[in-house]
Image (cartoon, rainbow, N blue to C red; front, top):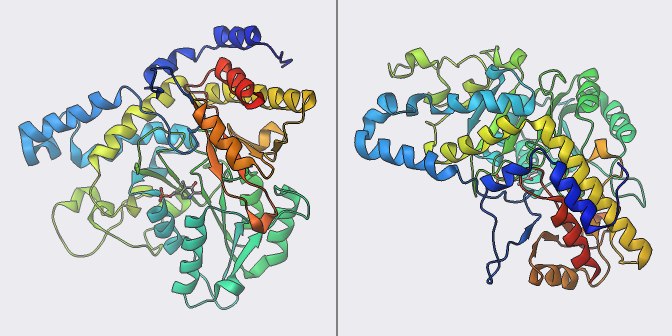
Length: 428
Ligand SMILES: *Cc1c(COP(=O)(O)O)cnc(C)c1O
């Protein structure tokens, strides 16, 4: 696309945008004067879909009028509620319906999945993680290693960028996997790194991991709803994601899980258990002896959390309607336009914002991470007082990085005009 640095060009792109109508499906936060904020923080907490209220009200009504009977006789029987999220979840991540389930929240699921997929031995006990991973992921892998009696200093391997670089090269990741070889038990990477916005080549990483006999799982917190995925086809062993970032399902929202069918069909795979993962036909017989459901559902423990799931339902229905491939097309343009305008602004008058997110659009999603100089925090605060909601991350010393402003225009509700106005504010 040949972008132009004008407001009228931005408006023209909005006119041509076939997804523009979805903005009206969301509540857009406003400033004190009632003017809509530029909300570029959907990578952190997505906005509220207007349809949420109706979905919640339905469950409140059934609870009020039916009580416990709503488990089987509600409009959307609670016994089966998580099943009502399966089709849309599977479409979102490129999975078979039996390979996904919605349950718990993200860090909990990451731990549950590692119980099954991190099975270290004296020789093979290493976990490879991307350097600068989200703290929750670090904590989880560290503790899993300790849980098995190994030492994270030995067993936790961090993949760091080359000297002077901010993101990882696929060739280096693959070489590292080869190098660790029969000592590597698990590759546990973010799909998109939360800090740099880098999207990794999940297919290549999975293939490389399998070629040395390791398991491969991904934390898709910043990937689900951002980039189309083919988890089944790529042969990924397991994955989990949260629902409140790009997926707009509310603070502390529920989480999705993917378990490849070759594992989901294996009842002998060690796992933690609770009654909701038991075969549904015998669940209410209250018998001893856990019989796991076939598929990802066999990792459930507790009964479905109806209210977070009702919110999630409202949101993923929108994703299914809009189509993740269509959203991605718009997203590439939105983020490409943002990058173009920042580069133009840097040419006019060096703003000192270095984009550390990969330039290659196949290696990123919505988000651009702008590394700032010494006045980064002040600049970020200026943006906030000028009606921009973005996100500030303190300098990452391990990487020799300055503070980073993360901006994520999302195709579901952001506009090209907002991108244009954002860069005008940045310039001023
Ligand atoms: C947002 C995020 C989390 C948060 O985990 P919760 O359990 O939902 O609080 C974990 N990991 C990554 C990579 C994230 O981006």
